[in-house]
Structure formats: structure tokens, C-alpha cells
Amino acid sequence: MSRLVYVLNGPNLNLLGKRQPHIYGHETLADVEAECRKVADELRLDIQFHQSNREYEIIDWVHEAREVAGGIAINPAAFTHTSVAILDALNTFEGPVIEIHISNVHKREAFRHHSFVSTRADGVIAGFGTQGYTLALRRLARLIDEKTS
Ligand code: DQA
Image (tube, rainbow, N blue to C red):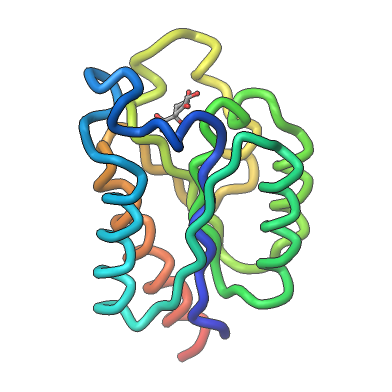
């Protein structure tokens, strides 16, 4: 099984560090990517790290991942709560999928409590801040190792 993992980020996450820091913290998405690359090296994973404000780009990356990747870690951001299209794309992916939310969405507004993506995800991480990304990578590495052994 491929040790390449796609780390996908949805809308407004390009503003991480500047956007509502009391909710999402002060780290930028570049900081998160750097931390992911460090942990990926340790786990012997390769990563493709992407962010887009456009739903179709996220869908296209999931389609790309179908061909080459062993797992997906995704923070779909607001598309979590709205996108059947991203859910449908993830349902075409055969490997493990971990859903990440920096904030604890269950402690927030009711409209954030429902996730289309959670009906596909093998695991959900919420409320661990940006640390959730590396936790997701550790889980994906474990699931990939289990499938390969
Ligand atoms: C988020 C939570 C979503 O509800 C929100 O729309 C985001 C970020 C999080 O990481 O906590 O943009 O996915």
C-alpha cells in the first residue's frame, strides 16, 4: 500500500493564524505543513499538502489521491457541513480517511455539529488544535502499516 498521504484543507484555512485566532490559534497553515512534513519523515510517509477555497479543487485532489495515495487526512472546513460532493468523492477512495477539525465543532454552533464527511471518515479528530494534523498522520501510518503487514 502506498505511503503517500494527501493532507487536504478547505476554505479559509489559508488565513490560519490571522483568522479568529481565539478559535483556531496563531499557527499559520505553512507552520502546520512544516510540522506535518517533520512527522511524516519520522513515520516514513510522503505527503501532498493542499489548500483550496474551491470545492471542485478538493474533489479533484481526492480523485488524484485515488490513483496514488494510501490515505487522506482532510480538514474540509465549512464544506464539512455542506458538501455532499466532497463526501461522494471520498466514497470513491479505498484507503483510510481521517477528518480533522482544529476547533471542537461540537462545542460550537449547532450547524457545525453535522458533518457529511464523518459518514465516510474512519476517524474524526476535533478540538486538538493544529496538533490534530500530526495525530491524523500517526493514525494513517498505523492503518497503512496494518494493511501492509
Ligand atoms: C473547522 C471547523 C469548521 O466548522 C469551520 O467552518 C472551519 C474550520 C476547524 O478546523 O475547526 O473553517 O473545520
